Length: 195
Image 1 (cartoon, one colour):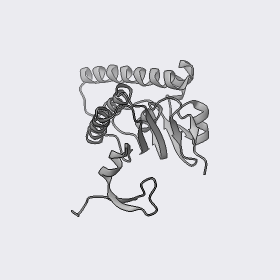
Image 2 (cartoon, helix red, strand yellow):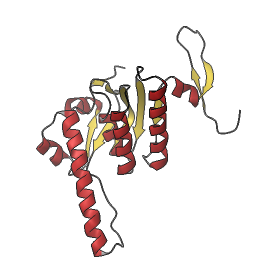
Image 3 (cartoon, helix red, strand yellow):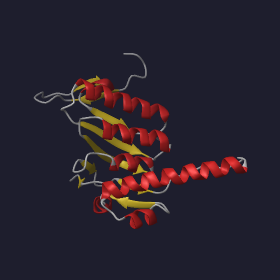
Image 4 (cartoon, helix red, strand yellow):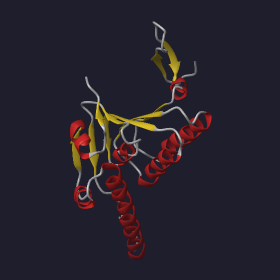
């Protein structure tokens, strides 16, 4: 086994003992993981896997496990758009935390198939930009783009949670942290796993 290839214990249905398998085996079982900050690299990997697995069999659901502090907006929106595009339903499961872009991807799972573990934390807020050392003209353009992104994210949260626009807009003004049950009441997840 090459150094750096992660292996995990996995027990196939009907087998008594687990065997050590590489992560690719989990992909074949249609289990995907977002366990880091959202950036272009992980976004492209997840998008590629979702499209490949969808082409391989568009009747079997996919499962996306999320433990992410958030990250870049555009790669996160790309993951969300792909989740809406592929034919299989995508179950989203929050384990640990789904903050910022992580919560946006979490809410993008198939409605009725979004789950949080009992001690999971969810956080929503507006997208942020970094405007240090930019010229005034560029600053105005970036603020305009940031406002468009905020509007897009807000519309998605409104559509997928069923909350009124004014509630989501107000909540996105600051960091709003939620327990699993609070995220369920908000409409970000549909179920809280039992211990």
